[in-house]
Structures are given as structure tokens and as C-alpha cells.
Length: 225
Image (cartoon, rainbow, N blue to C red; front, side, top):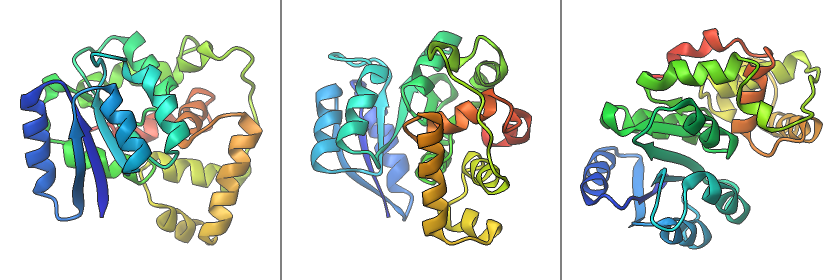
């Protein structure tokens, strides 16, 4: 069961998203809210697997709130609802460790897919903004230019396999099976990658891997639906 909290100041969005998620047998809505305070309270008390929230809330914007939520509930993945497709906005979202970017103008037809992709450690980006996102994943002016001094690290064959599996939205079990390792070893490798790169979560690791060419962004275009 995937536990989900929804936070939006737009009542119609709350109703629409709640109704769509309720159609999925493996989704459970833990609570709803309207601002950043509600999102943080949910993270601290409910520990949901996913929080879907507005990019801009009355009290705080999601890129500023995301690190606070992660400190209080590290296992909670984040999806933001945006009304903008500017490259700078996309950079802020993924630099903050947010895993999903849903553009309101695209509707919510792929909402369930986005939740599952993010839940299993992948990224999700609305189709109409994927070109902006891929620009940041591959161009020298990309997301990681905001982090001065980032270096190119070497990765073992197993680590590269794990990175590619995460980028495709595979579960840890599926990745471990494909690489013929156990889940404990996989998670130890992920922790080793975090320590080696100084990055804090899987989202940042995957963006780093694409930015530095370890993962070819072209190979995962089909995951940006």
C-alpha cells in the first residue's frame, strides 16, 4: 500500500487528485492539507510514502520546504504541482530533492504513473516539460552548476547498473534480481554512492549521473511521460 498526503490551496485540485488516487487499489490517502505547515505536519506525524503538494504555497515554496521534510521524514518522496514550465523552476525543483514535477496544464491523467515511479525511486516529469528537464540534465549550465566544486567520480559496473535501474523506476528487488545481488548489498552500494558524491538522496544521485554522462538521458526518455 502506498500512503499519500495531498497538499494544495486549490480545492478543485484536492478533489480531483483525491478522486483519481482513490481509484487505485494500492493507494491510501493519509490526509489532505492546504499549505506548507500541513505538508510538514503530515511528514512529521503520518510519515507518508509520497507527499503531493503545490509548488507555491501561502507560507512557503516547495523547494524551500523539501529539505525540511526530508530531514523529518527521509523516506517520504515528493511530487510538486506546477503552473510554470520555466527551466529555472525545474532546476529548483530537482535541486531540492523533489522527485516528481506535474504540470497542471497537462492534466492529471498520468497521476498514478507519477506516484508509482517516484515511490519506486524513479523520477517523473510531465511530458510537455521533459525537454527543459533534459536540457538541465545534460547541459553545462545544468542543475549541478548550482553546487560549485562537484567532481566526476568513477562507478563500478554494479553501481552503474543500480543507477540505471533507479532511473527507470525499478524497485530495489527488481534491480537486485537483474544484477544478481541481494537487497542489502544494493542499499549498501547506494549509501556508498551518497558518501562518495556527497549527495543526499536518490533524486540528486540520478540527476548527477545524467549530468556527468554516467547515464545517458536519451536512454530514459520514455520514463518522462
